[in-house]
Image 1 (cartoon, rainbow, N blue to C red):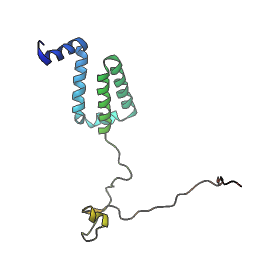
Image 2 (cartoon, rainbow, N blue to C red):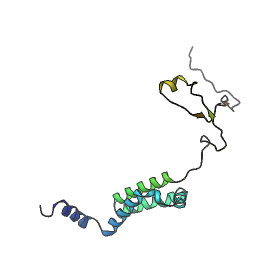
Image 3 (cartoon, rainbow, N blue to C red):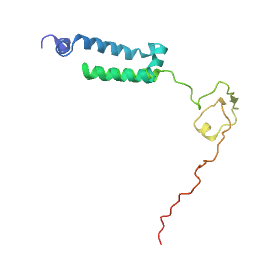
Image 4 (tube, one colour):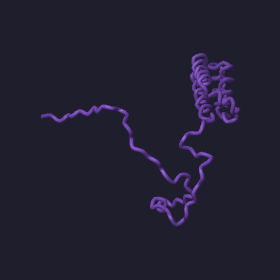
Length: 147
């Protein structure tokens, strides 16, 4: 075989792909690798409805116009961009005003002793629960027992 593996790969690239597809592919690979380097404002805009629509439309357009591989890379880039976008805090996350109670080393639960865990403190030491309330005024019970 004349030229070896490098010549075979270059031959495939020359016959199958146009230069614009190669440039798009290289740009997408670099974008996927360095997705954290995109500014925070761009990542915030990508998480809006308009940003998601544009990214999805770009993935579909590139997949139909150029190649499925480029479309797949845009889809991966879209998912990474959306996963790196900043999120608002949820109700179950730590609030800044929460105080932490320190736990003495002697009072370990059985599970903590068995798993050799060493908790430092508790963020919340009491849980408030309430019974499930049904807002219906009528009862809809049926019996399946026969005579």
